[in-house]
Amino acid sequence: MKHKSKSVPKPAEAPSNEDARALATRRNIDRAFVELIHRRVYDRLRVGDITRKAGVGRSTFYAHYTSKDDLLRSQFQRMVAPLLTLTQPPQSPLNATPLFTHITTARPIYRSLMGQSGSRARAILLVSFERHISHLLFAAPPPFPIRQDIPRPMLTHFIATGLIAVIEFAMDDPAQTPEQLQSHFQKLIAEPLTGPHDR
Image (cartoon, rainbow, N blue to C red; front, side, top):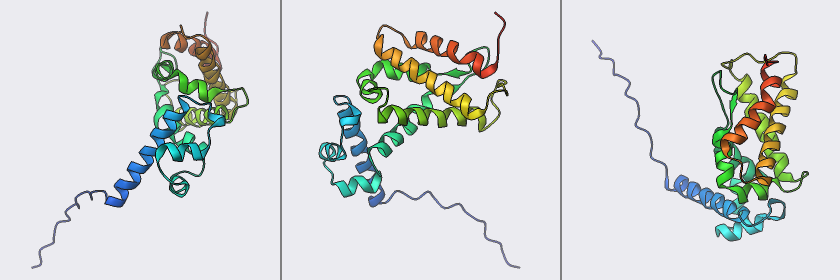
């Protein structure tokens, strides 16, 4: 009688030296980027500035990112967008308080990114917010009813635009606390998102 061998799960493989080097290089590029936008407007920043600060060649940069916009998009999606979350009623449908906390503690970065109304970085943030909001609201049933009489793309664009407006307001009024900014954001989006409420 043959004994069946039990399938034993393989231990997780340790990252190779090459993977570890690639990760370290990527972190170095990310760090250089953040340090630069603390002091310089995003639209005036060049890939060459980032590579010099990071101490890497252009080919190394392009092995990780296709452009500085791709770098911004990647950093935003990994570190900033997750700060915007769904909440349970009776709270605001979307909680941006952690995001606003991040903004008030990293104000020079957001000043660099928001720039003029037509800035490239601002447009990237808007589209990234739209995608994240759409995922939060429609990837799975949310914990609250969403009104159905507004097309989803229009609704997500409106909410993302409102969020950008609150961020711009935070840049102009440093005295605003994250909680006050969340209150403004809640008032902007509550009715368009979930429908009219009794006064």
